[in-house]
Length: 296
Image (tube, rainbow, N blue to C red; front, side):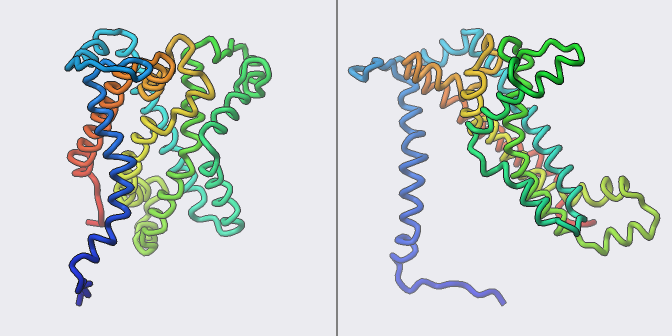
C-alpha cells in the first residue's frame, strides 16, 4: 500500500516550493534569459547604449575560423576528459570493491581530489609538468622527448585534460563503486560455478548492470567538461599556446571580460547552452535505449 501525502492547505505546497523556485529563477532562468536577449544586441563596452542587431553576432562568430577552431578544441578536450575520468573511475572502483583490509583508507584517499578547487588542481598539474621545474617534465625529457606544454599545443592539451579528469575521477569512482555494491553476489557466484573467469563476468554481468550508472555519468561529465573546467584552463594555459586549449567556455570569458564584446560573448553563451541541451537530449533519447537496468 502506497501512502500519499495530502495537504489540507492549498497554499502550503506552493509555499514549500517557493524558495527553490526563487533560487532557480534568480540564478538560472534570469541569467539565461538575459544572455539570450544580449546575444541579439550590440552593446557599448561601458554599458552606455545598445543596438538591436538581430543575428549579426551569431553570423559574425561562425564566419571566424578562430571560433570554429574552438569547437574542435572543445570536442577533443571533452572526449579526453570523459574517457580518462570514466576509465580510471571504473578501474579504481573495480580495484577497491573487493578490498577488505584498509578499504576505508583507500576509498577516502580516492575521493579526496574532488574536494580540491579546480584552480588548485590546475596549478598543481602545471607544477608537475612545468618545462623547467616539473618532476614529470624531467622524467619525460630523460627519455628523449622534447617537453614544453607552454609552447606545444598538443602537450598543453594533454596537461589540461589530465588536470580536469583527475578531479572528476573521484566523482565517477563514488558512483561506480555504489553501482558495483548493488550487484547481487549470488549472480556473480553462480557465474563462477559455471566456470566464467573475471573478464567474462565483467563483460556479461558487471558492465551491463553498470550501464545506468555509466549513462548518468556520461551526462554529468559532458556538462562538467563544458562548464566547470574554466578555472583549470585559466590557471594552466589561458587558452594557449596558439589557442590550442581555448575551449568554448573560456572564449566566452576572453571575448566578454577581456575583449569587452558583450554581444559576442552572450551569443557564445547561448550557443553553449543550446549544445549542452542537445547533447543531453541525444543521450537520453538514444543512448538510454541501450541501457540495461536489470538482469534478463
